Each structure stands twice: as C-alpha cells, then as structure tokens.
Image (cartoon, rainbow, N blue to C red; front, side, top):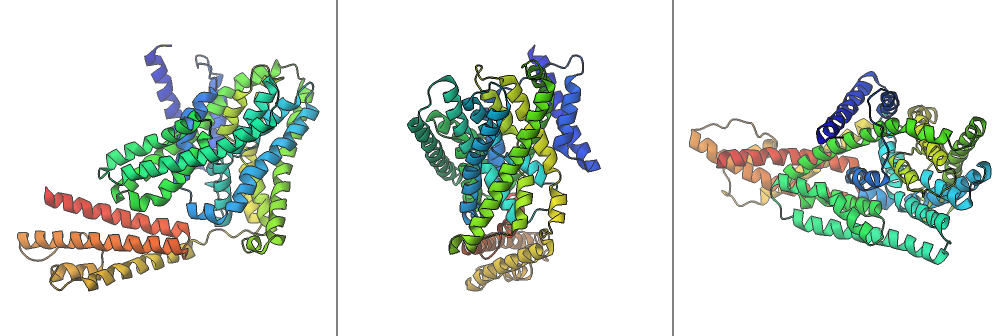
Length: 524
C-alpha cells in the first residue's frame, strides 16, 4: 500500500470517528457503541483493508497519551484521600478477578491449560480509563463514585499486565514464583519512581518556559518519555505515565503560565477525544477478523455461547462480590476506615461501571502463539469489552434507581463563588498594603471595584489612558498571583473540593491570559 493510500485511509478513519461521534452526541446515543457498530459494518464494505490490532502499537502509541490525558484531569487530592480503596480495587480486585475468571475459564473451555486461563483472566481483569470515562461522561455521577472509578481505572493496568506477563511465562516455560514477585515489585516501584522522576524533571524545565507553544510541545512528549524510560528498566510504563500526569496536573498552577495551562487543557482534550473514540472504531473494524478466527478454533457454537455466558456472569459477580467485601471492610473495619465508609447502594454502580476497553483489546494479542484456543480467547475478550460497554450504558438508570444523589450543581457554583470571593479578598489586602502613590489612584480604584474589568474605557488623553491601563494591568497581575496563592492554600487545607479549586483556577488563568494580552498589545 502506497504512502498516499495509507494517508487517505488514516484521514478517512479520523473523519469517520469525528462524524459518528458528533452525530451520536446530537441524537443522544452512546458514541462508543455507535463507533463499534459502524466499524463492524464498514469492515464488510468491499475495498476496505483488513484491520489487525498490533498490541505494541496500542500499548506503546495509543495508551500513553490516553492515560496521561485522564491523569491530568484526575484529582491527586482525591487519590490520596481514597488511597486504601483504590489499592483494594486496582490491585486486590484485579488479582481476585484474574484468579476467579481464570479458574472458571479453565473449567469450561476444553483442553485449556491453567496458565492460559490465568492469562485470559489477567486480560479481562482491569477496567479501562478510556472506556470508563466514555461511559461516565453520559451520567452525572456522585463525586465519590466518580473519584473511585477514575482512580481505579488509572492504577490497575500495572497489576493486570504483570499478572499477564507471569501467566505468559508459565505458558512458554516453567513458573518461578520468586521471579514473579520480583517482577511485580519492579513494575510497581519502578513505575512510581520513573513517574516521579519524569514529573520532577519536566516540572523543572516547564517552570523556566515562558512560551506556551514550547510548554505544550514538551507536554505532548511527556507520556512517551515516562513510558519508554519505565519500559526500558522493566517497570510498568502505564503506571509511570499515570504518576507523571497526576503530579504535573496537581502542580500545574505553580509550574506553568496561565496561557500554557489553557493551551495544554484544550490540546489534551482534543487528543483524548480523537484517540478514545478512534479506539472504539478500531474495535469494530477488527472484530470480524477475530470472529473468523474464533469460528475456526474448533469450539462449537453451543459450547462457545455457554462459555461466553459463564465468563460474563462470573466477571460481573466477582466485581460485585469484591465491592461488597470492600464496603464491609470500610463499614466495620478500623475506625480510620469507618470515617471514610460509603453506603451499600454504591456497590451496584461500581459493578456496572466496570467497563473494559483498550487495555483488554491490546493485552489479549500478547498471548503467545502456542496458547491453546488463542483465537477463541481473543474473540472472548472482544465480547467482554462490548458486553461491559453495553452494561455500562445502564449506569444512569442504576444511579437513579439506587437513589444516589446527583452532584449538587448549585452548591458547587456557590462553593466556586465563595472560593473566588476569598481569593479576591486576599488580593485586595495586597492592594491595601501598597505604598501610597505606588500606582495611579484610578488604577487602584478600578481593581477595587472589579479586578476583572479589563475592557473599561478610562478617561483622559491617550497618553494618560495608556499609562493607567498599563498600571492597572500590572497591578491586576499582582492581585491574580495573590488570588492564586489563596486558592492553592485553600486546596492544601482541604476546605474546598477539587472541582471547585479547578474551576476558580481556570477563571484566574483566563483573566491572566487576557491581562498578558493587554500588556503585549501595549508593548507593541
């Protein structure tokens, strides 16, 4: 296939992704499900090339930016506050699901080895950050549920991939438990260490960059730097990417300029939209080829339907059972945990939101050629992805039936206004401490009246107006810095939720960008 032809297919792929996603949103359908259906339909059109999933491409090219974009939007404060539950779900639940699904698959699939069954269990064990966000975006989730799901889906890939590697080794060679434990420790500790190292290094460089384009360019390569460094030492690349994204997102207000933060947010939202929707189209396009392989695997239709039904039921039951157990630990465990317990009615939404996606899609192709019934296991993994996606679509209904409170938007707006008012008060105290005559009285009064009135026309001749505008812009910059410090101090004290903090920081970033633009125009 020539370069021009390949480029034309890539362009067509992106155009279909955008068009279907836009149409699905307009009519209220699920964009991921619509893309899967369109992908399957298009794959049967004469002339459309066959699409084969390359696991290295998915894991090394698509996954790092998707995880990084999700991590930037995830609250590190929420992750810290819920660290025990996230570990129980992202490590404990993955290990539990791997064992349970592995044993059941080994029992119901003829001639399947135990190592291959455990490898399949590891493939379908982790939920996927991309798929979870695609589903939860359609429902106004309670903040607690949203933080649990986001944190779990970001942090469970390392556990699943290490379990998969261990099972793959057992398929092709003798199993060594000491080596397996060592690989797991290296994957987790190394992934966290590399993520922190990359976050510190990139933060130090970005602190010195004053041009938003350069800062954004560096942001685009950060996930790949973290992934490649971690992969190079045998650590978890996904975990390194997530850790780097969490810390850089948390430290963004003190590392980057307002213009850089706004540009980075828009760019990563665009990248995330394109890639996460393209993944679902890729699933649809590759499904017919996987189905053909499954039909030639020697497992009859009746047995295949039986296996699919059993695996799906066990997968959901394992997640529900573990979630109930975690809830019991929090409600009846140590006092430190009881203070952060949640209600039983949260367990069913957590179970329904256990959507699988791109990680499962890529990991199943890592199974070695000598894996018994490899083609059928690949098809079974695709069925799991689609079935959990369909189950996840019921999440809004489950939340309503469970009586879970939707986010209180009025309260969040009030909290945003309170925090903004608190920051404004801090900045006006700075104005009060200024020496008399340090700034034009009209500029000072203008800041006092409303620090955001950048477009007000000042009286006087042109030279006086220019001087006063420059004085106002300079003074407003000082007050914005003080307001941002007040917001970050409130965040550190834990007095406001992260959604409120980020909303106010965005307001300040927009104002700062506008003031800087005014100063640049004056300089020109």
